[in-house]
Image 1 (tube, rainbow, N blue to C red):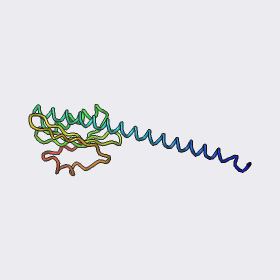
Image 2: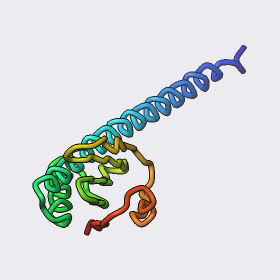
Image 3: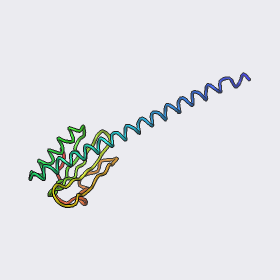
Image 4: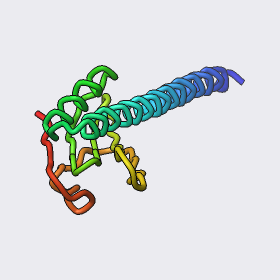
Length: 138
């Protein structure tokens, strides 16, 4: 009987370590989901700002500046802004999360492009999706 006295302590310690590890994993997952939502919100707002500037007849560089300012106002960083006619496609980063959004100002069907990505892609890789001028973020 005396050889079994420490077994319960080992199992309790193992259970505590397992519960702590699962709690940390759930907390990290919740944080990642929140970052993704914030990135998507910032991308939507930045695309809206860029499309609004294009609808007013502004130059694509002005549209990119509006997108960058709006992304910054939302706590994000503009990675790239692609402006073509009345269409704006933007990519933003919020923490470790990345998101893309597209809007069209004026008549016609919306490009309805919204996507969250886990890793940053080179804006040159997006040329096949969106013809026109590429406004590189600084």
